[in-house]
Length: 423
Ligand code: LLP
Image (cartoon, rainbow, N blue to C red; front, top):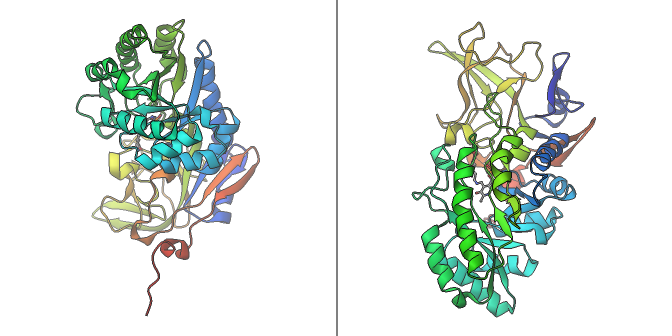
């Protein structure tokens, strides 16, 4: 489900040779395929075609303005979680009427900015937040559209750091609590209840958690409607998993298979907040081998990309396929065959700075370019300047053309926000 393929032993993104991009822009560099982004959107649209459906791309996955513009031009809305993401989404050409605002800690400034922009709805995560939104809307003389983000107490069976909808997590409002808030709705007269929302977690590869949670929320929708609220939006959050190793991801149609029948003919607009599904497999991180080091029987392939560029392996033990960008050898992850193993690491001064450990990787030489796959989501958006490293540039490919959509940071960029040292 992507447009990264080898031809004559060279990795192409669509029609663009990635070793050439690496040589021209230097490494590390993120490369995104516009065609793949649009392909993933199309897969979602096809799968949910029977429902009235608004796809709100989750900005946190990759907030590059050109990625956002691609999404906006394709008719997507946006899921944001901060004033910064609101700013970026609007700069990227977002229609504010297609923005949903999630997150447990929206500040009053952020709420005001979102209200003034005219967003579609706030996904409210607590009574205190609802009171704050109500207060701000009353002061601004407007009505705030809100949805309850409910915690359906459903385990999505994913990494503990990215599961969000069990009682142990900070996210969402317990259904009983939301019912109590509903009973006192006259205290929130400047808010209009327009929807319900959930988000079960990320990199979900089972459909069952969606089925269970939607059934729980639908019972709540009935109660809300009986209480006289015109609930129109049913937001199921994001979470659809992608391919990291090879075959773990489900097709969008499999998720739709449990979601569509439940929401059909209910007078509801489905909102989906996919991040990873849209952009994860639409991006690779290219890195060059700086040195090869053999120590205690181990081969360390030291690259110029590091944990500050791609945090997922060290933070979640995330697996990313890694393979030379110029090779005739077909990819293998079989650590028992002839392919020698390596730890693929970066220059950062932490033992946790690795892209892969004990990974099958053909013999590579210093200067060779490696492609780290599945890096489009939560790659650049989680990158940092740790070890005073400049953040990598980003390239967007479309067909046989490509361009830099974010330049490599300079050393001046690193110190710009700091007050000048005088005397
Ligand atoms: N909606 C809400 C309210 C979310 O919190 C998230 C992700 C999404 C949508 C998008 O989820 P997706 O479709 O991308 O799974 N940094 C982690 C992932 C954190 C996800 C946080 N919330 C990682 O690299 O795996």
